[in-house]
Amino acid sequence: MGTNKITAQMRKELYNLLASIETPDDLEILMNDLCTDKEIEQMTQRVIAAKLLMEGKTYNQVIEKTDISSATLSRVSRCVQYGQGYKNFIK
Image (cartoon, rainbow, N blue to C red; front, side, top):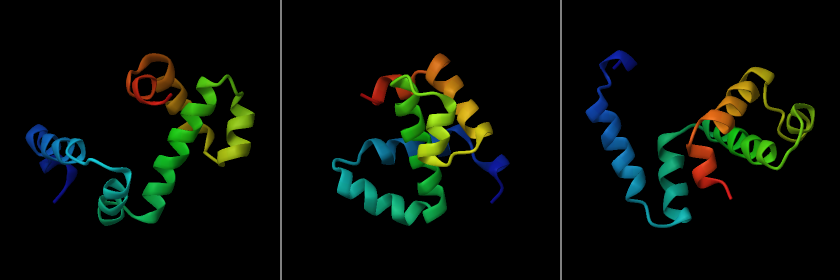
């Protein structure tokens, strides 16, 4: 099934499933079924990069610590500056 066949309602099913998870251990079990190790690693990089940027670290410091690509770091930085997700959930 191509991504163009994924509807907004289908995405909502994913979000509802994720929102129903009660513990980090349960989320880990589901994530291991849903995602490859590489996908989990990439999401982890993004979360840690966002946290470091919010702490005032420079791009070079973030790249050194996470090995994230500069293109991905740029996207994370835009989300930290203009988005709501990282700001709402990273303490």
